[in-house]
Image (tube, rainbow, N blue to C red):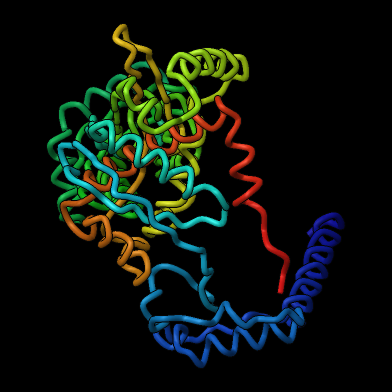
Length: 416
């Protein structure tokens, strides 16, 4: 061993010893060896006491649970309690959809004052107008692994093999999931290999875990044949991030909602605004949105989607995809106002994930959306509620009542 190697070895041994000393002194959050025991009230209390000792914070409300902590197994680790977000209700909202047909009450979890009052006004308006027409246009999830195969000749041969063996790969998926189905594979040659976007149907689950397992199974099968290596996610599918690809190719439920507001509603509801004024505001708003380079021209669809997501146990990070919506308004020749909202990437489920937790399950039951066969119905209700919210805030922004309502209802009262 030369002198440089001796110096390097000594240096790294010294650093490792320092690291071990730091680890030995580090105070670790209490975790049980047994998974079931880790969700026991005893271990939750140990963690709470640990945080009390370390931070001195007052912890009174976090540990208050209305259900057994073991119900959270599979949803969270290192449990100390629950975040209590206020839940309000709006409705009845009339929906004329293929899956959601009738009048629905919609739970919203939020801490934003005035949100539900405004939403309720929009719900009443659209229901009086005859309701919201809704339809799920597409339902697909995808994962985009990358295979390390270089050169046009080799990559082309690989892509041809994928096309010829798609049915074989579909059978591999069936081995690991009852509900997931491989629909197609879309390859793209890049300088780093071949990105293979795998499109799946996921039933009533949002499908993150399902598609990851299915994709990994496919990739292992392919690699056994080709011996080229892969990464299961190339980031091309833009999971929990916005992208133009997802906007056009689909990621989750692609939903459309529309309604026509008769001009007679203006007099009936005394809205202090005309459809012509709204149309003018929309034209200016669209121009400003394009000028800003906005992804999705809407007022606040994210508010409603976030509120329903939190209430029903959806993956909150998927708000990133789901709130990229396009809201549209058109003044018709007869004086009526046509309104619509298009949501291309609504990522939701009615089974799995947080949907089985007690509070979230009850919120799904309120809308008749608990369990299998209900995901498309939930998507249509979310789209209809989003359109109601858009209509409400648009009126408020046009006649300036938005400021007064938030001043009245959105201010926090002093702490007691």
